[in-house]
Amino acid sequence: MQKNFETSLRDLINSLQLAKIYPREHPQCRNALDKAYESLQHLLQGKEEIVVGIVGDELAFEKEIFLDLSRAVKPLIQFLKERGVERIVFRRGVRREELLEFIVFLITPKEDIGNNAQHYLLLKGVENIFVSKIRLSSSSSEEVRKSVRYLNLYHGSLDAISKSMNAVLNSQALDYIDLKYAFTNITEKLFGDYKDFLKLTTLKKHDVSTFVHMLDVAILAMYLSYRMNFRKEEIYSIGIAALFHDIGKIYISRKVIDKPDKLTDEEFAMMKSHTVLGAEILLKYTDSLGILSPTVAFEHHLRYDVKGYPKLSFPHMPHQASLIVSVCDVYDALNQRRSYKNSYSPDMIYNLMLKEKGGLFDPEILERFFKVIGVWPIGAVVALSDQRVAVVEEVNEDDIFSPRVKILSPDSKEERIDLRERKPEIKVEHIVEGFDYKKNFS
Ligand SMILES: [Fe+2]
Ligand SMILES: [Fe+2]
Image (cartoon, rainbow, N blue to C red):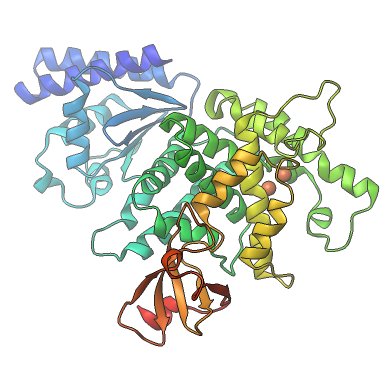
């Protein structure tokens, strides 16, 4: 398939280059177009549509095939980008004339196209080629405030995730490019300016949608693996695996999942089966999601001491990715409960999880996790022992109880304190719940 795509792409570029030099009726142009059309038809065989995307400076096609083809592709990418196109869908039934109009569109000055490329194509009678920006980028204009941008990105990712989850639920193909784009965006933010993004994960919101837990665990796992110096591709795979870790739960009755009381033995057995069910589902998607996803779905409750489930006849140490996801999963689950009645404060969560060091959790991973997330997470509003209220701005790796904070109240003109240096006279006493500092202070 990759070969076919490459051929098709070369034919398209060839046709594009000729169209720049000759009028469209020129025999050279006609021949090149015929060839490009033929290879596109070949590519579309047995498919409803094919989707090509631009992610960064690369062309993405279908599943995980990311092409860094010859330099010849670069001008094409440039053409597309200049015209605001990051994603092209060729539908089955696309006509030769439509492909021609698409090629002409690519060499038309962008001023003549206007802001709406799709509209321009429609006016030219093109109905089976769709061009668009990848959904998320529309929310990232410069003037939008950073935190709002991150929030949009977060919600955009939730959209991409809910689409993917629904596809899996209905045994359909995944829009892998959409998912990859959402995750590339998140990963990039986590590498650079992670603070605003991490806040969305570690501070609990009240609208806990179905996919929030999945996305939060994925973000935490990606951030943690980034800080553990995994390679970019590995971080991405861990994120995807984390995202799907509980997918098996879709087969389990909501009554069991949401039951507030203790589960009966039968219900508990049903609950436990989400690991095996999840792995079975994900095994059908290994070409797009990779092998790590079913592995993590299967192992994320195995525990570091291998005393968890599913029960294995030959116990083995879970994959490191499963151990990472397990820490992030439990942290997020405990954190989520803060929005409900049984609230756990961050220091309680830390103490609870610490008890499982070497049991449920790999000691090194657990330690690393709290080093990067801190006991009091970034963005948390905390009461200090000197009666002031502050917001956590930075975690101190060497002293996870004493972050760097900014004083919020009484208003102190942005006074910042490194609590590590003010020990023992000032320390964090407790978290201040429901304190919307953004509303009050920014
Ligand atoms: Fe689970
Ligand atoms: Fe989970």
